[in-house]
Amino acid sequence: MEARKRKYIVYILFVLAVIYGFYNLFIGFNKKSARLAPVSQEQLVPQIVLPAKTIDIEQYSTLNWGRDPFYRAKKGNFPVVSEKVQIDWILNGILFNKQTPSAVINKKIVGIGDKINGARIIDITKTKVTLEKENSDIFILQITKDKS
Image (cartoon, rainbow, N blue to C red; front, side, top):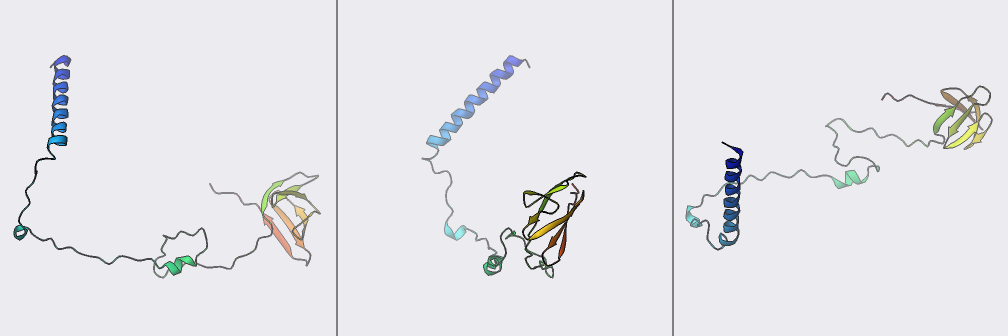
């Protein structure tokens, strides 16, 4: 079949489809398309009603922000709740130089001997920073590599 005849047939079918659509759109509403069966002939279909799974709002209102409210732990697998530990220092980075090593802690650049949040910096290496608090507590802040 040549291309011209195929185009002609497609155009005719398109026009017929448009006419059929308009007919059903405007004229089809006036007709009763289906006759309703008398009530005695209708068959009733049994409906199965399942109880809905409810969410205990009180349980989720006590959770910390950022928790997924739709996460449900498996039975016997309860989430671990730990005490909040106050972090005084966050190691953002280390700028290592043999003469003047420095670190970025709490978004501030500090060097050996500087104080930040009540602690004095006593050592800076390529991967860790050692802090000493007034009461001789020693804290080590260490950079860990991401495994990505």
